[in-house]
Amino acid sequence: MSNDLKEVLVIPVASESLGVRSMCTYIETPDLKVLLDAGVSLGPNRFGLPPHPKEYEALKNRREEIIRFAEKSEVITVSHYHFDHHTPSFTDWAYNWCSAEIAEKIYGGKIVLAKSYRDYANFSQRRRGWLFAKTSGVHAGKLEVADNRMFVFGETSISFSKPVFHGPEGSDLGWVIISVIRYKSDRILFAPDVQGPMSQETLSIILKENPQVAIIGGPPIYLADFRMKYEDIDLAIGNLKMIAKHVPTVIVDHHLLRDENWIGVMGSVIESAASMGHRVLTYAEFMGKENYLLEAFRKRLYVDEPPSADFIKWSKKPSAERKVIPPPI
Image 1 (cartoon, helix red, strand yellow):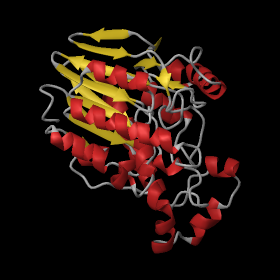
Image 2 (tube, helix red, strand yellow):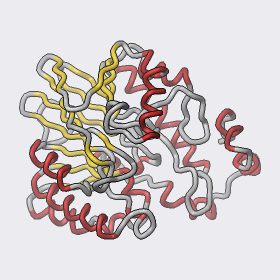
Image 3 (cartoon, rainbow, N blue to C red):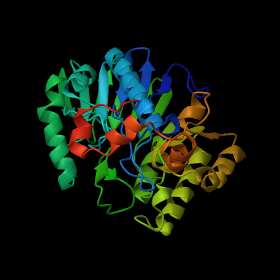
């Protein structure tokens, strides 16, 4: 439990610092158990290589943890419809370790508070959101559109922002919703895939909430000068420094940790936090563990721990076959 929180438990479940693509987080107040963004994925191609067997071991392990925490939760949220943030109902062992049975285990009988797929959604997310409502969402005890709404459970409330950009202003990746969980004086903010944030409006929303703990999706520095402008990365780091000065505990993970040089980029943010007696941590560090980066070190993993012949044979099958045949790990 964070020293900044009096009665609320925060448990990171899956993220890049835990070996996979995700920001899944479990939060428990005295009267509510919530699982945020119950999805997990692997990057299909990095450095010209498919995921390493160790990544699949982590994916299977984290998926099992997501199921375990989902089964004890009353509420599950969906901030947007990327597969590392929600669990689809199709079978895919190659990238998402998911199936209809797994989706039912996660969402069955739960109150699901999800971003609208009709409003502020690009074509891809609109389609995925519609499919979610027709498949995984059917198992929910209740499926509610969460955008710009508050839900109250005893003395606990969960409020959701209006849709904000998935990264920079005008991002073609669409929009996400930020959530804030409150119990008495405790406040935890969850801002997945805001990528810093890169949007000044998103920064204002985060600061206005004045949380003790802010969980932030960091900038995708591995895409710098490729699909992301350096100016946007610099803006994200500057905004993170501002957040670190105002929020006692900032947990930063996700896109940021897909690059092995992330710590160098974050140095000024960590210094800004320390100057105020605050701290900046990854999911793993918040749990008191060492960072377990796998995707960022995929090339090295293939050299240091070459996969078996069976795994190589499986990895060369067409994508459609790999999705329905679990990898030999």
